Image (cartoon, rainbow, N blue to C red):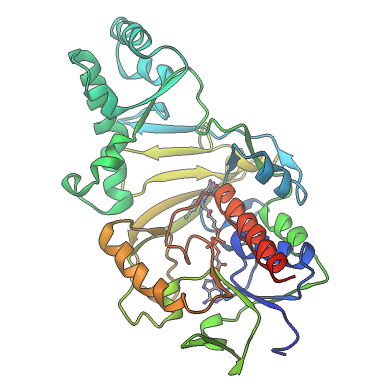
Length: 391
Ligand SMILES: Cc1cc2nc3c(=O)[nH]c(=O)nc-3n(C[C@H](O)[C@H](O)[C@H](O)COP(=O)(O)OP(=O)(O)OC[C@H]3O[C@@H](n4cnc5c(N)ncnc54)[C@H](O)[C@@H]3O)c2cc1C
């Protein structure tokens, strides 16, 4: 079996599936994907629940990108439902668009004050601009500073505390500095040129992406049980493997967490189906000043499914990732200490020239879907360059 494949790809999320397709199609390699879950798609996986409602098992996924290359590439495998995500923040019962914009301004303040603030914002920054609360805080005008504080306290602070499990003094100032305010009436959550939801869902997209005679898939298999790195050599099923390995799983786990676990935040998801056609007015509502969960998403807004009298929502409860059975590491906690630990693991792989780390887990980073597709395409470009160099 070891000699049957040119490449082993660990993990069948976007990183693993895109690089597999590229290796198989562009480079004619025989690829085996090993996936520990019982399904394809990684965290983008969606399925029909018992009420026939299409839900995203690991949290709501909305495709958005500014990259034509990425959009054209992934559009080979799906048609799109034209969907622009809108998010509201529930601030003591008032639902305001986020990112905070001019429409939110008129909900947060009385119309006279909102109009005064709008004029000051436009005079200072112009229209259709995106600024950050730290830019506003630097202003000498006390009302603009007050606006920055309003957004910080009501949209950002409590949500971030829940998401990351930190107290305000532990929030990195650079994160605070990036909290956006839009001087526009555009209520879309993302402003990218390309946005949408795969018409038949992500799992269907993956089925097409993986449909290639050079790709084999093995589900329900933890690669760490069959793949080992001994010095600079790879053993697969206890025999030397000389081909390419692309690893998209968690790097600390590949090395049995020998230097300690890389810290992550995980999420508990609560799915609820309600006997009503609509539960809320927009796809996602963020709970930014109260409630133990961060947000509620109603899937039918995203998918456009026309089902009367039933709808499914999901609440997200963030908490610390402990590595216990069944937990999924979702968000890397990015700080110098953790990155240093990551580097120690990465160093162990550096003598193995055809072993590649790709994806949010293997690179210990947060990637949006478009960014990970782009990374996979770039890795494929790089591999083609290396192959050509051998000729
Ligand atoms: C709650 C949430 C919401 C998100 N929403 C959006 C959004 O709206 N828009 C957007 O662009 N991005 C979104 N993202 C980001 C998106 O999920 C990632 O960009 C994408 O999942 C990255 O793909 P990946 O292949 O790197 O990782 P994953 O999707 O996690 O895939 C990795 C795969 O590797 C498998 N694996 C791991 N270890 C092993 C092993 N030892 N053996 C075998 N298999 C293994 C895993 O089971 C998994 O299937 C969201 C992320 C989260 C957490």
